[in-house]
Image (cartoon, rainbow, N blue to C red; front, side, top):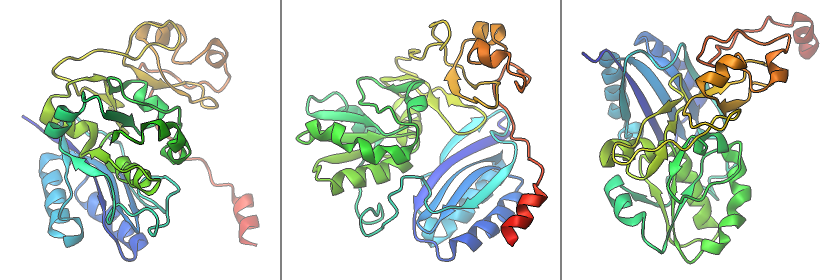
Length: 317
């Protein structure tokens, strides 16, 4: 019997007094005993929440009843336990950090790439005049990506705009962008259109929806997700493992954070090397005096730091 679900969603829709909305929405989520991470901005919502099946249904029904969010396409995963520990709902300048904050230039509500449903993506992906573009960060596509996709060595999506010139050679092609759930592609494809690319598409619902509706064919590896699961299976048709252990080169899908908090690098490491290096990325980090205890997961809960009262008083002067 399914006890818990995890919901992934986004919505570009103008929210008046978004900061107050974030505060109210946090209390609403807590009333349902949901856990997760939601970003609220003037431009919309971006969230992943997890809880009981009943609570998730109430949450989805409530958002769909609001005209601003009636078109949200929830990606639903059945999980054995909640995918987060706490509930966070924060107001930020953007729902996905891109640096493209001028709605007069980039506004996905008004102009963005053509949405391709998974079935249509399957038909197009192998055409000679189609270029598949991964707009995610390097640690995401290192663990999984579409076969023959163009990828970028970027640490954050905000670095993507600077990579546009690398796609100039494909201006006469059909550009199909993709990401985890679709949110980054809304802005990435809008930016490409703004930069003069004419035939721009995006995989609607991202990798997650593609896996659910099209079996994940030709997606190699696992899909990185921003919750405790770290990575999930997508391909049920022709799955392969492409990521390798940083230390020994053996194939592995396990991604961890370095046990040394001053390093905290996000990387792939097999169980054998994890045991040998005690969850560290290197011998230097293994013997670091602040190294955290490694429990085999490589996941570390953020510990609240004590308030620096002296610094706080100075900032209030």
